[in-house]
Length: 281
Image 1: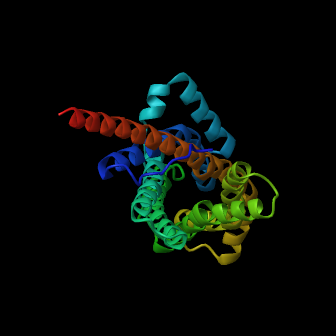
Image 2 (image 1 turned 60 degrees about the horizontal axis):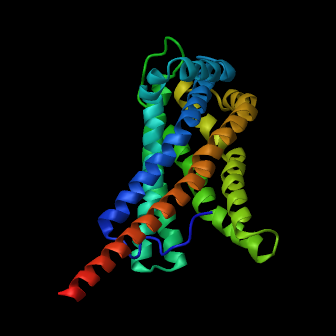
C-alpha cells in the first residue's frame, strides 16, 4: 500500500507535478517491455505476419540478446510513452483535485474524462503506427479507416473505465462487506477489473484490425475471422492489460506517494530551519 500522507496538498505545484511525471514514467518503464511484446504479437497474428507465439519468442530473444536494440526500438518507446502519459494524466488530475480539495464525485469524473482522453489519443495513435508497422508481408500501407479508430476508441474507453473507476468502486464494496482488507481489495480489483474487461472488448480490437487488413470483406467472413482469433486475442490482451493497468498503476501510486512524503518532510525541515533562523535574529 502507498504510504500515508497529505498527497500533493502541501507541496508547491512545480514539485508536485515533477513527482507526478517521474513516478508515472518510472512505473511505465517497468511494464512497457512486456506490453510492447504482446501488442506487437497480437497485431502480427491478426495480420498474418507471424503467429502470436513466434512474435513473442523473437521479441524475448531480442530483449535477452540485444537489450540496447530492444529498449531503443519504436515499439518499446511508443508503449513507454503511451503509459507514461496515461499515468501522468491520472497523477496530475489527482494532484489538482488534492490541492482544490475536490469531492470524490468530481475526482472520479475528472479522472475518467482526463485519463480516457489522454489514453485514447496516445493509444489510438500508437495502434495506427503498429497496424501499419506490423501489417501483412507485402501489404501497401494505407490510411487507417474511421471505423477502425472508433473500434479502438471504444475498446480503450472500456479499459480506462474498468481500471480507474470500476476497480476502486469494487474494492470499496469488498471492504464495506468485510470480505477483505483495504490493501487486499485494492490490489485484487486493480488487477481483476481491467483483465475481465478484455473478454468483453477483444472483439472490438479484432474488428478494428480486420477492417484495416481486409476492407470490403462480407460480414459473415469477418465474424468467422473474429471468432477464430477471439480466444488467443482475449488471453493475450488479458496478459498485457494486467501489467499496463494493474501492475503499472500499483507501482505508480506508491512510488508517487512515497516521493510526496519525502518531499513534504524535506519542506517541513526547511521551514523549521528558516523559523529557527528568524527566531535568533
